[in-house]
Length: 160
Image 1 (cartoon, helix red, strand yellow):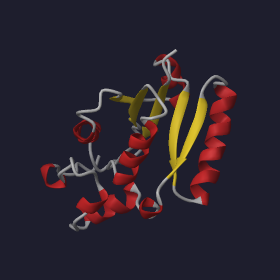
Image 2: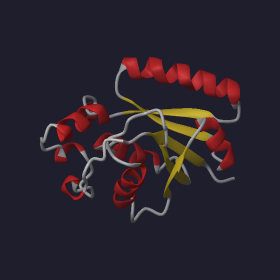
Image 3: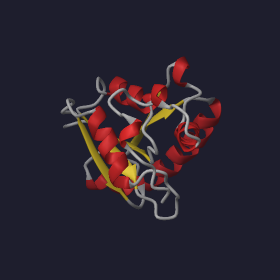
Image 4: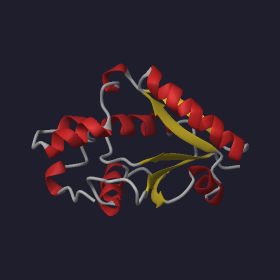
């Protein structure tokens, strides 16, 4: 049976920390679906299509990675796509506590979907999309915090 993992997130924007987690997970899974959550209640900086395009550039030469989007419950998305694993990166103890609670609720709703956590490398611990987005909004150079394949100058924020 093919081992499929879903790596869900808003990825607004996709960071080098996200990229590193996916690259490390490629050795664990046959396919990784990077699933961009489309949440109408959340105000995003980049549009859904822009975020998917950015991620697609990063993994354009990796056949084991697929980029998609979804609305609704992540475990329902996993079921629709035959994924038995939810991939999450952990930076801090606070991340662990938050992700543990979500994983336990997900497990109660879908006992056949297992959450898999990978610790970030120490250098990526302070990097998160919120901080990177704030740098971009303020006109700063955030290029060191996003994958090399993403040229932020090619994208304008839409503030949706």
